[in-house]
Image 1 (cartoon, rainbow, N blue to C red):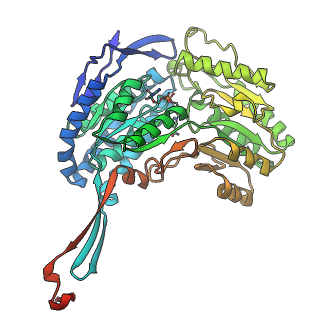
Image 2: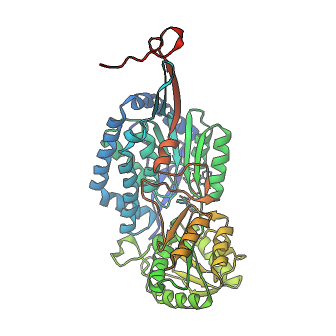
Length: 499
Ligand code: NAD
């Protein structure tokens, strides 16, 4: 059995805690590797190494630091296929999806090459007699990130690229479900010239997370994952005086107005609802057609498209639309929620229950499901399912549809499909959700904008990537400097024009 490692101090280091988690192949249901679960002492070792390495990295000029990221971009492109394959093998998503995962992370590395521009600071000449005032952005020191299983390449890069570009050391605690790609990323960063100890990977579970939360040297924590854990990490990290940003779960609504292009809306819903088996925090899990006529037309368009979806392993060729879900527990949870939908009176229009794939009977495959007549009191509406299950809630009016999305406790992403600019503009202005698509089903902002939801989808006040990342990974220091030679007798400013 393959035994994975940690990546500490520039070395692959075997786990010493004696605790391991199984890394599954979701397509076959087999255990393919063991990942070590770090002890407090192993986290402390990584922190000690990071704290020693960080000052020299912070003193390296920003442009040299940026050059490391520039090389990393080249290496990521060089190894794209290898990374995608390793990612698919542990996560289960298709190869194009896995390459997309790497690509969206790479784009943030690319954006962070501009760090010297972002870190320039501010200067006020002659703020008083002989006085200059300047603000600079300095790194925090040792920073850490805890990431989810569903984007094992992208989300680590969203965190470590700005962290190291700003001169910090970064300790990554990736998901124990798919830890291989994060380890490969740390190796690549070193190949790109990153000094040892600046980017380390400590594999683990709650024990490692708690060690990070309570370590006095770690200055900041980034978290992406489910809302209950986000809440726990935010409150504990803040109580321990750390800077914390946590991104949680989602229930993304897509509103379909009667004037929408119904083919376009149906295509968008199939991609956004079932792509990556629905295991995306920006997946659309609720369709809200406005008016029964719209709902009927939409369902009619959706059903054949959903029934055509090909579910299979990532090795199954180009035609596979989505792969298995990540674990047997995830599959069981989806099945439990689907059953609750049936029991609570929703109409199961496409029934993916009992789906089996020949040759992969033990894999964690879930067939596609489409519910109609879902109401807000049902569990399938209230909870994040994180699977290939789309719920349709029929609204009578635009106001009712808007109200549904606004009243839901999550506020990550949303979309509206309409041809009417007035309605679209009103929606974008009033909705209390962080990322909004207009005829775009998955409105993930590009690297130079920021990513983040509202309500229970986020805890903390700065978003991921974009300009916010440079704020999160630095502190401002403002210097007021006075030089006596700038003063003449009587305290007036002595200005010597150049001739
Ligand atoms: P998760 O919350 O189970 O795990 C996330 C991380 O927290 C992992 O590293 C895990 O090891 C750690 N963890 C798990 N239980 C813990 C505990 N009790 N104490 C301390 N740490 C713990 O999430 P997941 O299943 O890996 O990812 C899916 C979730 O992530 C979904 O809810 C999804 O919506 C969310 N997500 C959100 C965003 C976003 O940007 N808002 C992006 C991607 C995923």
